[in-house]
Length: 284
Image (cartoon, rainbow, N blue to C red; front, top):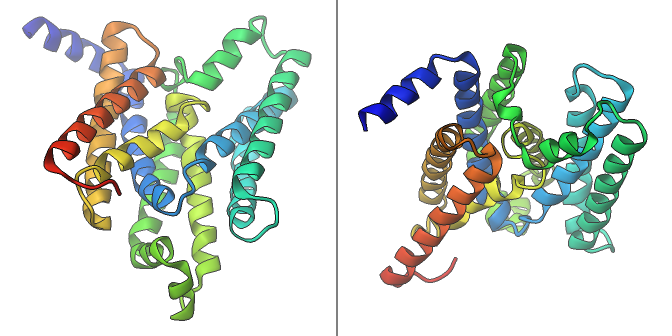
């Protein structure tokens, strides 16, 4: 045990590990706040769609040689988030069909661009790193850490300030609209938060695993707790704890960070599912 702590102390002396922990905790925090709302609004599938859109936008940014890929990735992802939420609610084309069309197209175009206009000699490694977050969280620069901190602080503040409105829109949008709540505005806010979290999470788990980071903590918490506040708090604690343990485990075991964290999230969900079944808690 003392040897383990010695190794952890050694790793913590490196700046890239500290950066990874800071960004990992912030992303896990934002993802857990968002996940509860998405699950309750039946929009869990949007995480996958937007992650593929972000991958496509990132490929375009890499091809045109942008040093700050956020200039393309974030606006494009926000725009698609707004379109997908609106489509899922009002348009003739069903929400899941819209997600499938946009996500598959973005993924295909992104991969095609990276092959036709390669930015390095190892395209397969670049694609794998982007899709699964192989090591990007351990290669963060200080500027990227500050950007993540700023976006995370804004996301948390927005969620806290508009908590009651988001709660109302999440549970009964029609009733909220009838009582004077500007539901379109708060759906727009939710869409922007979704996009920001998706873009941030790509550094942690990659574009293919983002939805797991968003959904698993919420689903785990719902196996035991029932109120919106208690589920949100439990989801946040689970997400942050699993992210921290996952990053440490990945460093110690030399495994990819993203899949390690998601595997931990899956184990936690199974454990909470068993506990919920033993307690006789009905499925949310």
